[in-house]
Length: 338
Ligand code: AMP
Image 1 (cartoon, rainbow, N blue to C red):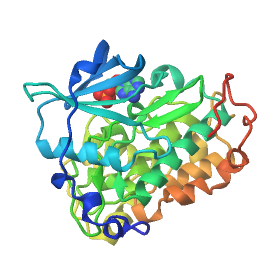
Image 2 (tube, rainbow, N blue to C red):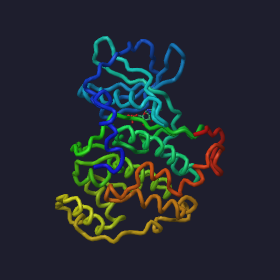
Image 3 (cartoon, protein in one colour):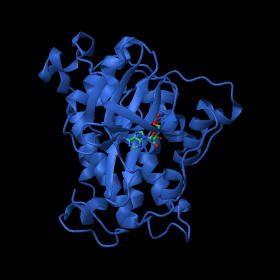
Image 4 (tube, protein in one colour):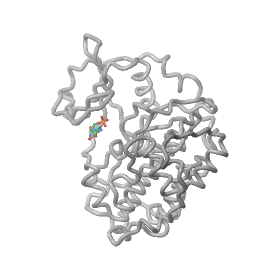
């Protein structure tokens, strides 16, 4: 059971978390015009659009005909989180007259692509964006919701404004203690060990592993820190850094059966100290506080990971918390207050 916010849904009651039971009032799509395609995936096609009533830019996420309950879940989560810090705002939900296409209209973010961004971030930037992400997660978790797909592609960063928004709530789920959830969620490079070994009683701490992967990517200047070619290889990449002794202890303490026919996965690897990843190119980002911070997020045992709230209190953010003005060394101008 989660160490924090375990009863967040119970105290809010069924109207908060029973997403199947609420009725959605759909608007007509006439108000919105598509400008260009931004991307797409298994569940949706995403477009930049314009709201013809106020001429504001927006994002139109056209959902593929997936199970109705999934659409309801995403909308309910976004409605519940209206006004949450650094969470993408849901502006409207529309359905075409044939009732075939359902779309979510959200605010638009002038996103800087991760592949071009992660090499440009200063130490102050990394601390700032990580703090913003954790602020979102602590709020979301305290309201009983796990995002389940935290990764750079779902963290929109407007680097001019120094603004961050967590997007794509299609996999988000309400947390209830003791419930077994699907382990086929998340994105490989950001999947925590519990998903990779098939442990179903996970909780909010799932998002903290993914956040740890993003922090490691930023401070060590790698596009993705653990870069497995499939789920087994992903676990192997993790074991080669954290060491097999800790992996074995984790499995044992939860009684997780783990068998593999992959020889490498059964090998033994010593833990690698985080300092081994420090190079002349990243040493200005990989301070002692940064290494300690990443070490406390990337733990096999979810109970050992910092919670979002504890993470926000870590010494790594000492300079960020004395907020108000622009933190020293933050790149670019136009810093928007937090
Ligand atoms: P997705 O399928 O949700 O990963 O979205 C596809 C792409 O659309 C993302 O990788 C982003 O580049 C872009 N995108 C999604 N949501 C937004 C948003 N609110 N603002 C700007 N770009 C977005």
